Each structure stands twice: as structure tokens, then as C-alpha cells.
Amino acid sequence: MLSKCAGLALSGGIKQGIRNVSLPAVTVVSVARQHRLYSNGRHQENKSFVMNSFLGQMETSELFPYPEVLNEEQRETMNVLVGPTTKFFAEVNDAARNDSEERVPPEIMNDLKELGAFGLQVPTEMNGVGLINTQYARLVEIVGGFDLGIGICLGAHQSIGFKGILLFGTDEQKAKYLPQVATGEKIAAFCLTEPSSGSDASSIRSRAVLSDDGKHYILNGSKIWISNGGIADVFTVFAQTPVKDPKSGEMKDKISAFVVERGFGGVKSGPPEKKMGIKASNTAEVHFEDVKVPVENLLGSEGEGFKVAMNILNNGRFGMAAALSGTMKKLIERAVEHATTRVQFGSKLEVFGVVQEKIARMALLQYATESMAYLLSGNMDKGSTEFQLEAAISKIYSSEAAWEVADECIQLYGGMGFMSECGLERILRDLRIFRIFEGSNDILRLFVSLTGLQYAGTKLRELQKDLKGMNLGVIMAEGVKRTKRMVGVKTVPSISNETHAKLAVPADQLSQLVGDFGAACEQLLVKYRKDIIHEQFLLKRLADASMDLYGMAAVLTRASRSLSRGVPSAQHELVLTTAFCQQASSRAHRNLASLTAGKDLSIDRSMASIAKDVLGNGGVVTTHPLDL
Image (tube, rainbow, N blue to C red; front, top):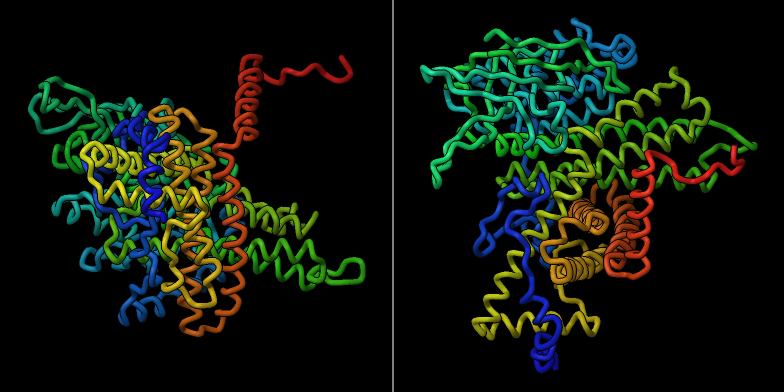
């Protein structure tokens, strides 16, 4: 019956709509525009779960089973490292003191160097610890639970500061710099942001011009808000360079990346910035005046600096999710301690439903974040290369989840939580930056939606060609899929054979949602075509739905493993996963429905109109109720 209906399904508006799809190969929104990840021809095979969900396809090769990447030797290494690291941060380091003094004391820096904390992923033959991503994630989780200020100091050094040398450096560059930065002898920093370029990294104005003798680049420019900027000796710097276009022969400015030493001369740092949080970390302006950078310090190829920068950031985002899962874990411990000891109205707080809801919500957010973090790091260690959307989602989700957990923890403590002595307000202040730096959450949401839609658009253009070429196999398959949608039949196969039997219901919820998500993406492309890049109200909601999809997938695969192994927390994880998937599925379906619902689109237009009025008026438009 479905086969007979297939031709009808493609003969009307759907067929015509597909023919009219015209999404540019590279979108004009800054982040998505410059991520040239896919070819303009037939779409490349991709194992990313998130990317394929934009096609309405369930790609599970990087979901099931939950990654197991540590061998016996690596587990033994972690057994050796976890205890001392935890003990150091619990008993030696004083996060409150660091915050108050707005620095990491010299003795703590020395202790961290002795622990090997500055070269966790540098190969052992270059004075590093030689950890893989999953091992690194476990240690930064500990740091995140105790002191985010120090976490930024360490992360700015190795997660982004010298990560470019690890990823793109020549053998000579690695041999020269990695042994020094691994021991902390020299501190590293990542220099991208400028006064005129925040989220739009392509607009940087720093310039590096090749000298007449061809031996140096002469670097000039200024960078702002650079973590470790005042204490670093080695900088990964991004600047515009004149590059000859291979097709036209014209010289055009393109971003290039360089390894710059303070010792080259002409490098100056401003005073430490006064910040809301992460005060222990050093943040400063860095100025480059006629700095002579040897040509051999070009990082990667000339004109490929944006690629270098995005790969560095992309490779570092898993660490943020791991660190913030540790922060949430400690906050939950604080919340539980208070709820089980504080007595009000003759009862402990733990018996009240509103308190139970807060604790449960915290646990759900932490579990989902931790599941994403180690799913991502595990896949990276297994050789995955197409994880940019998973990394972006993990960064967005973890930073917003940690903020909510901290806020609710303070709420549980009441007035006590508002006091500095309690220590919770410091954590809240520290957390605020995580939604801003290393890719603001607003921009990353657009990146997720537009990159996924670009991938789906490529697939639809292929379908156009198949329709014109009368490829009957493709026509029938697509027709059957659309007919199923029309009559309410699920279009994505169930994954219940890959999940534990007790998770059959949430597994089916995910399968249904993936199909609905793919259909919604196609509708957006057909309706808006290339103008979808301007529909940011819709793109945000689409990204939120995508985040819920990935969250459901992460907890499902993790809980399935726990249930299969019979780990002590398996039944608790079953409840967590079931509850999370119920909530996430409901949120995602609401967001998808709002993409086409007249009421929601009308609200979008009203919001745009309100914003236009307020912006045009220079502030609030309404007359004061007292008319005074």
C-alpha cells in the first residue's frame, strides 16, 4: 500500500518543493561560512550522530556501545593520578584565597608543574604525561570540581594555548616548544580576539607581512581578553597575511597562524583585567609591535589560520564539558549536605517536594553532561574526525547546565548561599564566562543549525538530481518515507536492539524524534531555501531540539552499558535516563512544532518588532505608569 502511494507523495508539493531547494554550499553567517567541512558535490559519508539527524537518519556507529578506550596500562595510570590530584585540590589548593588574591600563588604553580599538570597530553618523550583525551577529561573533571580559576589557567595553556602545535606543528616546532610548555617552564596563550572581532573571528585586523629578505613575518596588532596573556612566554597568534589567490593571481588577505615568543621582542602585555569571575586566572591585553616572527614559526599553511583556530577550539571543547560535570558533581554534594541537615518547619529540607525537584533536576543535568563529555572524548580517542557538532552541543549544554545547578544550589541555601563565606557565589561568578568564551553559546547554536542544514541541503540537492534523472529506486524510497510521515508511521528504524531492553520506550522516543527532526529540517529548507540563514528565531529552536536529541542518545548508550554490566548505579541510571528522555523528547517536539505553528511564528514577529522599537528608541519605549 505504501509503495502505491509513493508516487503520489512525490508528485505534488513535496516533489516541487524539493526541486526548489537552493541552499548555498557555504552559508554567509560567520561561523558556518568559514567551516568548509563538506564538498560542494555529493555529500561525504559522515558517522556523526548529530549531523545525520539533520537528514532524519539514525547513525549509531559512534553511539553504541558506549566508548571503552582505556587499556589496562592507561587505567593504571589514572589510578595513580586521580588520587594525588584530588588530594592536592582538596587539601593544598585554596580556591577562595586564589579568588581573593586574583592570582594563582607561585607555590601552587610550582606544585602544579611538579604534578605534570601543564603537559597532560604532551607525549612522554617530550616531557609530558602523554594522556589521551578520555584520561585528560577525567583529570580536568577533578579540577572543575574544586577551582575553575586554576582550570582556566591550565586550560588556556594546553587546551588551546599550545594545542595548535600538537595538531599542526612541524616536527621541528614540536621538538622546540613542547618540552618547554609541558613542564610549565614556559606558559602558553591563545591570541585570537581583538577589539573589533569577537564572535566574528574573520574580521581580525592584526597583520603579519613577510619581510623583504623573506626570513621573517613582521607582526603588528593587539589582542584582548587573553587568558594567561600577562604571564605567557609562547603565544599562538592569528593575523591577516597577504596570500596570492591560486586562481586569479591576486593578493588577498587571509588569516594565518604563528607561534610567537615573548623573547622575540615587541611583545607587551597590559595589566591584569578586573573580572567578574575566574579571578585567579590571568587575563590581559597583548600587543605586538613590529615583532619579527621567523618564517619557520608559521603554524600550518599560509592563509589557513582560521582552520587552525577552529580546529583548536573544536578539539578543546570536550574538556569544558568534563570540567563542568565535575563542578556540578561538587555542587550537588553541597546541595545534598544542606538538604539532609537543614531543618525548617520542623522537618529536614529533603522531605519537601520543591527541594526534591531541584535535587533531581541537578542530577539529570549532571548525568547528561557527563555522558556527553565521555561519549565525545571516547569517540575522539577512537579516531572520530567529524565531531564538531557534538563538541559544540557539549559546550553549550554543559555551560548552561552548570549555571542552572549553581543557581539552584544557592537557592537551596537561601541567604546563606548569598554570602561569600559559603563559597557558592564564587562558583556562580566563575561559571558565567563559560557561556561566552571559546565560542559564545548564541553563535554556536547557529553553527549547529546551519552546519547541519548545510549537510541536509547537500543531500536534498542530490535528491534533485536523482529526480531529474528518474532514479526510480531513490524516488520510491523517498516516496515511501514521505507517505509514512503523512499517515503517522515512524520513518526511522527502532534502536531497541542496540539499547538495553529496559530502555525500549526512551529508545523508541529517540527514533521517532530523529525522524520528526529530519522532516522539520527539510521543511525549513524547502520553505526558506537560502534565506534560512536569516531566520535566527527558528535556528535557535532547531539547535535546542538538536541538543535534546544528542542528550537523549548520550544517556541511552551510557545507561544501556551500565544495565548490561549490572553496575551498582544501574537502576538509578535507568530512572535518570527514562526521566531525561521524557523531558527532552517533550521539549524537542515543542520546539519542532513551533517552527511551523502560526501562533509561534506570530510571536517571533512580535518579538522582532518589540526589539526594533526598543533599539530605535535607545531603551525602553513605554511611558512611565505615573507619568512622572
